Length: 189
Image (cartoon, rainbow, N blue to C red; front, side, top):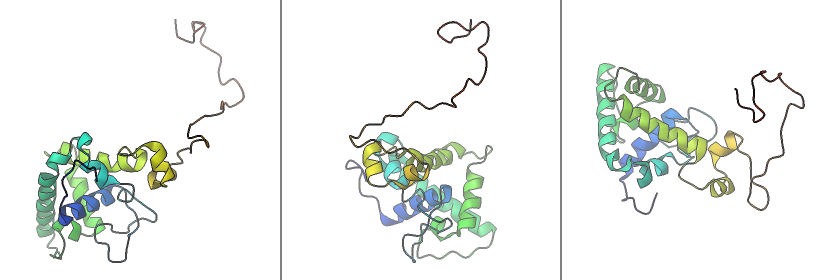
């Protein structure tokens, strides 16, 4: 968690983790993990730091998280009532939904015609950013710590001195003749 962020309560963290895990699922951290459903092998958005990223003041969502968690739990209660699902009240309503039900609810909330779509798509994007780019960490530090998303997508490790250098890559042949109006700088005329 960012040092300027107030300590969130445990239920809020569980809901944010469950939402992030719905976007990029991962394996359970422990057998009794309720937030991470274990729908996919390997680490997902939670292990990649999605909650840390969404709580970071620079992202802009941190002040709205309490309201978003409240709204998500209300949507989960409505969803459960529609389907006559019985939810375990030991955890927040969204966390109590099965992975398939979480996925169906998030699908509903992010549809083009949903009035709150922008809010939920924004939260989903943070889960993706945490996994795909480790936006909340410096890239060298994230790689040194074994960031699961960067390693999964094959992000190149820096050289021994911490700098990235790439050999010139090419197919080794000309792929097409340049357009006859192309200038010496490569721009079209």
